Length: 91
Image (cartoon, rainbow, N blue to C red):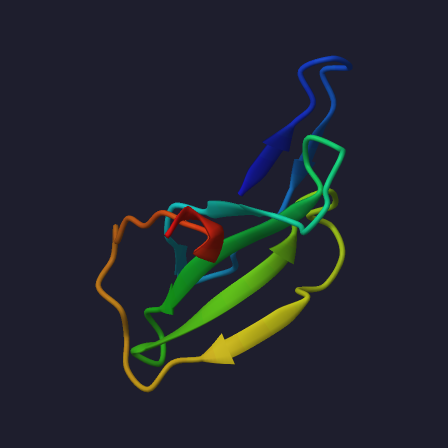
C-alpha cells in the first residue's frame, strides 16, 4: 500500500510481505474528523502461504505504524474483493 501526500509529494509505503495479497483499501472517516486523512483504512490481506485472510484496520494518517486492529478471518477471502463503507447515519 502507498499513501501519497499531494501537497508535499511525500509517500509512505506499507509493504505487504512475501505471499501477502492486500485487497483494495476502504477509507472510513473517524467520528468528528476535521483532517482529510483522519480515519481508518480497512483492507483484507490474503496470506497465500497459509491459505488464510485477515482484516487490517490501519491508521489512515500514518501507514508506518502497526495496525489499530487485526481480525483473523475463518477462511481465505478471494483476491480482488471490493468494498465500500456506508455509515449508519446514512440509513
